[in-house]
Length: 262
Image (cartoon, rainbow, N blue to C red; front, side, top):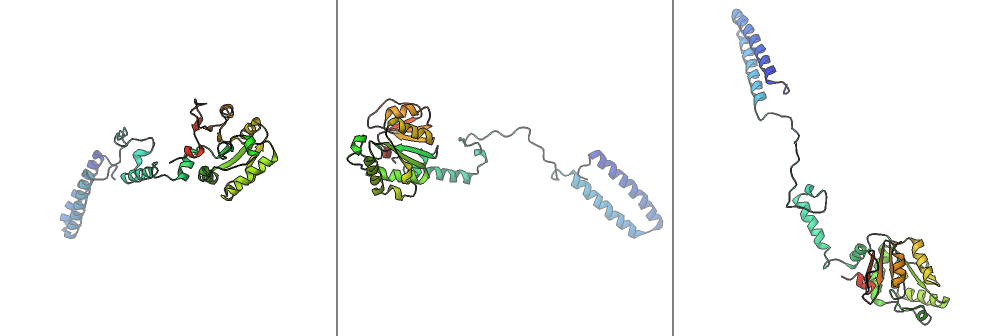
């Protein structure tokens, strides 16, 4: 009945009025006063119904907005759904962001953030994990850098890590595996001896990286890093010297642990 137009309502009330007039005249002729009160009550009900339909506070259909309201310029960010956030959500989001500022981040968080764009990591041993810098030195000894252990452990927890190096003989290979084992690298649960690869040439090491299709490669040889720049998404070049940037997808740092420093 709320969908009737004003004209229809007027005609309806007019017809009801005519009906009431006829009935009332008959009632007075018959002097049936009980019917008079019944009709009077009915008339009052009709009047209240009419007023309810005409009141501006009555139910109305919701009209769609012709144009969405402009977004507030006081709350802007890179998130597409930001305007849907309540003030409480914004406060919670800010609290989370503040908790990940450099002063509050843990080493595990930094490692995951720096290497987040990928899952598989390959890394050479000489000059990065080991104190030694040449295959000739490995014939005498192999020493794991104590400063790199914590970072290396975190990488093995969250990423698929492969270590590799060029060696001159089997004895050098055994020395490297023993040094890694004594440092506790194989007890962290993320790295096994089968993921430590050895080869006899630098091209063999580069072939390992390409075959594994790593997302990140860490190396200290600028020539290898330069050649792999076309095939590997990200690289970290370890060098104590300040060198010209090798490629846009290659980062440079003095050491592996420095790259993940707080």
